[in-house]
Amino acid sequence: MGSAEDARCVYKDPNAAIEDRVNDLLSRMTLQEKVGQMTQIERRVATPSVLSGLSIGSILSAGGSGPFGVIGSESSKQALSSDWADMVDGFQKAALESRLGIPLIYGIDAVHGNNSIYGATIFPHNIGLGATRDAELVRRIGVATALEVRASGIPYTFAPCVAVLKDPRWGRSYESYSEDTDIVRKMTPIVAGLQGQPPQGHPKGYPFVAGRNNVIACAKHFVGDGGTESGVNEGNTVTSYEDLERIHMAPYLDCISQGVCTVMASYSSWNGRRLHSDYFLLTEVLKDKLGFKGFVISDWEGLDRLSQPHGSNYRQSISLAVNAGIDMIMVPFRHEQFAEDLTALAESGEVPMSRIDDAVQRILRVKFVSGLFEHPFSDRSLLQIVGCKSHRELAREAVRKSLVLLKNGKDPMKPFLPLDKNAKKILVAGSHADDLGYQCGGWTATWHGSSGRITIGTTILDAIKEAVGGNTEVIYEQNPSPSTLASHDYTFAIVAVGEGPYAETLGDNPELAIPFNGTDVIKSVAERIPTLVLVVSGRPLVIEPHVLEKIDALVAAWLPGSEGTGITDVVFGDYDFEGQLPISWFRTVEQVPMDHKANSYDPLFPLGFGLKCKKEAR
Image 1 (cartoon, rainbow, N blue to C red):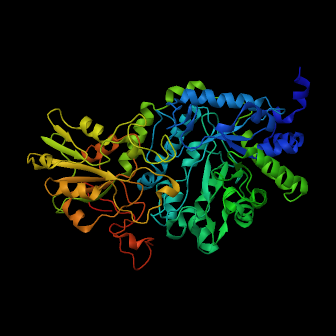
Image 2: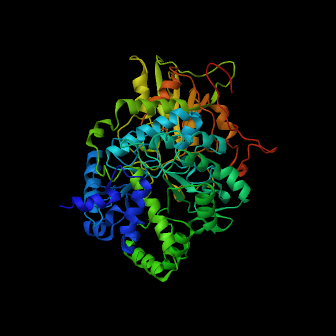
Image 3: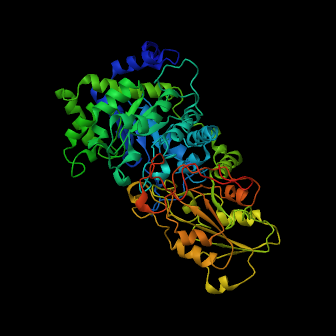
């Protein structure tokens, strides 16, 4: 039964041309089903009746929102990849019971590994990867991330962020690879890692996913998100179109040439014009000029932000955004209101049916390209790869290559590093020495991240204990007491300080001082013991001259993720330092934003700086 009908359904034929399948399916859809496909909802409102009745196109998990609720709530518990796969498969089953059986796309913010899932490999955040300058490393991280995301049943990640970071006061600084456009462009092969490498001759701008071990990627946030005035998140980027194109848009060309399937619009504005309603940039530039054939997705409640107060004049906001070129709307909760309003707008002609059809064609194109119609469910054989040894070794390699040596010895002729593994006695101190959550940063387990053993991994203290000889005594005190510091038999101290975890606007910071009394801890230790300082942060922080003078060695460790052993691999000399600053390290916060090409450029450490133990600065 149904086989004769299926035979006439071109869209169900895996051997038919993708555009033929798209057009055949589109021709069968009602307006309600088209609007449903343009809707992305949060998993908390994704009931079976909503999924099948409205033909919802996509579901996402907000940061920390998973199979057992929102992490931190009373009902939540740690969910493994298998739990996620069970949940996503359940949603998919409901979606396939809709009239046309269109599979949904489940999306998640896997921005440094599959970071929402307990036990996944957590890679360094992008700012650290930018310090490596290693495009092939980043591609391999994309491959590993795709496998771990797919293991959880999820085919779509909202990554990579290809923002060009112009002001470290921005709360999303660590999501950027660099202040330098060329370095950001060099890191875009992560798209090919996530999605697979398109074959030669692949049509320019056409989305591509190689197979079931790959995921749909998302280049974000289009465009200029890293260039806002004073680094204000969701702020205003004031610049000419020529500079917007040259500085901020250039990485999108590389992503599009690799077949990136989706692009996310930015919350920010360009010269006062909200990106979510900018027809010129979203349609005339991104789609027409750059030839992007995938779909444009809004950010979380991005349409709500088009009116003040947020969420008011919702129908007008929908009209502005969809007509500007937004194809899929991350609603994420008001799906009934959204469907009602967009349907009315389409029926009245305020949003032309040609615009609705274009949006749905783009969404269906990505669904066919990614193989969701043929393989809608999870592949349980991938579960064994989550957090596996080879992925953790890859993350460890990334940590090693990301570390930037900023100072090595008070006398350049007497380097302090590498440290002696067989030292008699070592003091380890600081807020970040034994805190896996701080080490991973934001977008880990939850949206903003948190403190403590939030996942499986190795802290810096764990790694030190593992690295040193059997006769070495390791003393750890987060804030060493006067009596601890009074001991005169320490060979050296390692002090790890830095930022607490944050994400987005809560990370905006006009001061950029080392928090948790980090400067005081450094001084109290370094005045008495030869000291290596590790700065664990998503951006440069203020290091006062008198503090820099006191310490013997200084390393920028960024937000290294779950594999703290990558740090000890280098500071104890098994590997040399390779990292180079992806962003200028200012002397005072009054200097930012800095332009490394300006005559007045006077940083504490310039863009590209990085010492080696065996050779001098590059």
